[in-house]
Image (cartoon, rainbow, N blue to C red):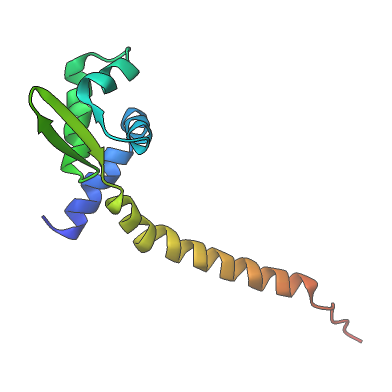
Length: 113
C-alpha cells in the first residue's frame, strides 16, 4: 500500500464521528468489542464491527483475540504521523506568519513628508 493510500485510509477512518469517539474510548485502554457495543447503544453489533474494520484497516487499532473475546487496542502511531507530516509543519508556518504580522503591526509607522 502506498503512502497516499495509507493516508487516504487514515483520513477516511478519522472522518467519521463514531470512529473518532471509538478511538477516544480506546485512549482509556483496550476494550472488547462487546464493551464498545455497550458504549454505543444506538449502533448494532454489526455496525460497530464495520467501524472497527475501518479503524483496523487504517492501522489505528490492533485487534487481539483472547478466547471468544476480541480486544481492541489503540495504535496512535498513525495519528502521530499525521501530526509530523501535516499539523506540525502547517502550525510552524502559521506561527511564522503571525510573528511577521505582529512585527509589522508593532513597527513604528513611517510618515511620508
